[in-house]
Length: 473
Image (cartoon, rainbow, N blue to C red; front, side, top):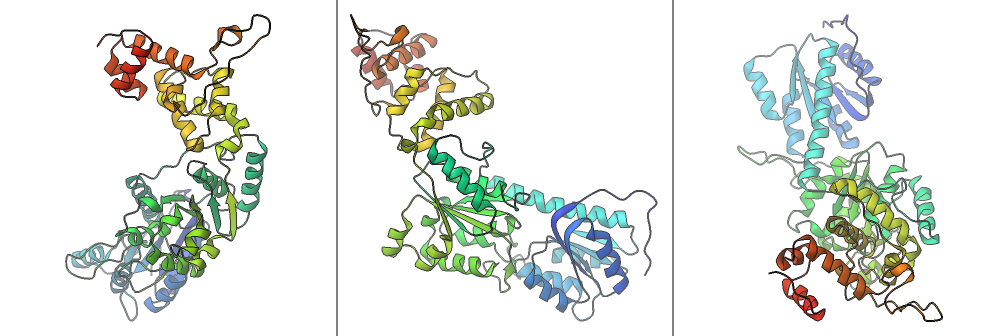
């Protein structure tokens, strides 16, 4: 065996979360690669033959395998082919001292990602390792993008507000983030469960790993098992290629299972086993894959009632409910309204490329009268719509908002519907001013104004007729 040293500095690549397996029957080569990678990756394991590699793969999850082709017993190519058929999606760098074109083609068909001839320079191997880990990272990102999973950027603690309810929630998140237990987030839709999950992840020791959110309610019932656990390759000519699932993409990080109450009953037993044993079996595969993932689940359903009705497994419910955090509805902490409105204006205006809008105290008071069945998400959507239109779009909530009482000032009193300084204090006045402003901005075009307002042209015409006004068609 000949190893070539490099005169040039070694690449400063460092992958603290990566795990690499070296499989080679030469002790010198195993030792050389183990020492070279020990300071660059989070974990390095070595094996002298295929059987040893089998045992390691069953116990650990690897991002990349450096594999010698010539091994005692099974060859490296035969071993790699078996692993691919079992659903293992690690990157593979094959090395050999004896190779021809047919061997290289066979290695690529078996699932090799790179092919290196001995003797090689260390920089050559490190470059192959870097490319392999970059491919793995890019594959994960592309997979998540194809599924259109959003990762919003929240505030430092993920949730905005200074009310007693929000401060208590923030304290619970900080406390629970320090442990690795499974967490169940409960609360109505739109209360910010994904933001809470992301805050739990970012404050935890897993912050350097991926945060993979998935909405169980949007998964196809026919594909949900493949989405979560992956699929083994079919060992037939022209058979399907294997694919990793979300558990694999969340390796070393957090898997957020939103709307867990919508997960099919038949799959709940499989999920329970994965949570308890920290192992998954890809669909169509025979070999289990170890995973290191923290689970955060969320639901707007009362799972205890779902269990009683037979729609959710009791054992899975108790397994998820190790720590339960309930997120309060917006109507219970309306004192945070001003902070929330300011936060959404500050964050959404730059994203939309529009100037911020001003929201008066009277308008905030109106927002405080609404019950917000869609919670913080509904408020966010209102502010986004208002920014596009250039003013607070209270008509979007009409007729749900109640009419505010007129402000009496004593003596002659104020004109009904007009507050201090002439600011309107009833919803109808605000609505009229907003609609007329939109009509004026489009030259009286009712069709365009209705589209901007998010109402039908007939509704707009009825409003205008009630006010005894006329607008161009």
